[in-house]
Each structure stands twice: as C-alpha cells, then as structure tokens.
Image (cartoon, rainbow, N blue to C red; front, side, top):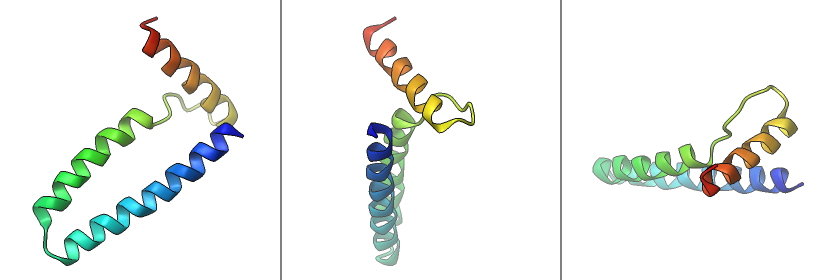
Amino acid sequence: MESYTTQRRLTHEFANHLEALSLMLQQNDVAGARGYLTSISKTIQMNSAILNTHNPLLDALLSKKYEEAARKGS
C-alpha cells in the first residue's frame, strides 16, 4: 500500500512538473525551463527504483531496502 501511495504521489508531482515546464516554455523562458528540468531530473534520479525485476512489488521492496542500506552506509 505504501508503494501504491508513493506512486500516486509521484504521478501527481510528474503532472505538476509537466505543467510548470509547459508554462515556462509558453512564456519563452527557455533558461528557466532548462534550470527547472535539471533540478527535477536530479530529484527523479534519487527517487527512481533501483531494481527492475519485472515484479513491481519485489522492485519496491528491494529498492526500499537498498535505499535504507545506502543511508546507513551498509
């Protein structure tokens, strides 16, 4: 359930990021859009699933354990 909730939140955030980028480009703020894209790309990379076993439940579980180990320095 936690993974589902997280995925829904990320999907919502993704839609908001696309809207922000769209508005910047409509205003011809290409530099702002590039900067924003760079910042969200870093965030997305940090929050991406680490593994891809083709089993979403297993991917979520293993990715979470990997992140916990990385934070602890294991």
